[in-house]
Image 1: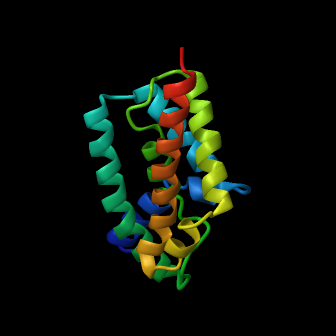
Image 2: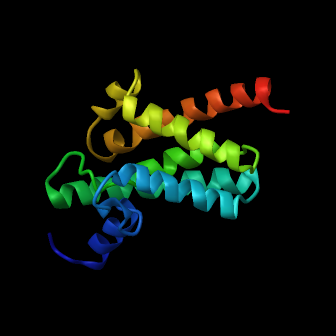
Length: 154
């Protein structure tokens, strides 16, 4: 892999600044870091939505480029998809530790379980396949979290 500035930038984005190189459970590490960042920053719902859109756009580009650089369709070190999916799960949710923990557990269950349609989306080519299954997990996670909060939140 040629170490051009563009390739280094793609690596940094795709691996969430190297979190994807965690020795074990890199997706879980990146999801936990994303949840913590959301909790600490938790800007307005509009800002969260904007951050999600930027993360998705950068993730599509970076995951495609980094995967191509590695000649690997879905490298395990690419975790920007987990970051985007985790933020989608927590988007506009109440900023409480129980909600963050529930969102984290729900997202990881959906991401690891790869329930339909996530398994099918993972088969899309390039960065689209890398990103879409986690984005679907994030959207489904947010819907489930919203239902749970509507019925069980005080």
